[in-house]
Image (cartoon, rainbow, N blue to C red; front, side, top):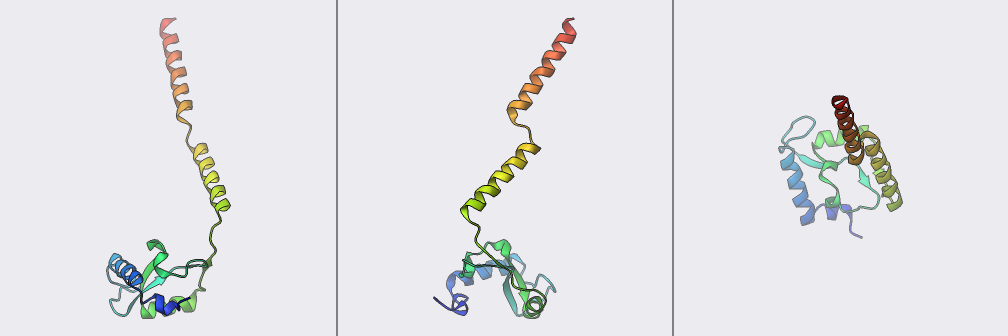
Length: 125
């Protein structure tokens, strides 16, 4: 397995780094400095050693000083991979929440039909 420092020299990481720097306006997201910029991983995945595999939302631009400060003040978070069964359970919970929040279209149509019948009944009496 390659060293992490070697991975940071790969073409794929350099392209990803350039994208993140551009996205953040080539400035530190904390102090707005334009010098000694680095791309910081907000957290690491235990199963993703390659830095370019992380989603863009997990990466921010920091200057050297802010990057050092961040690591002095915060512990590095390492997330474990979400299992397939955990993903299925989460998907099921999210679907249940949506069903609670929004009525199915068939229920809405049935309610509308009942309202229309009630109006028609009032006018025909």
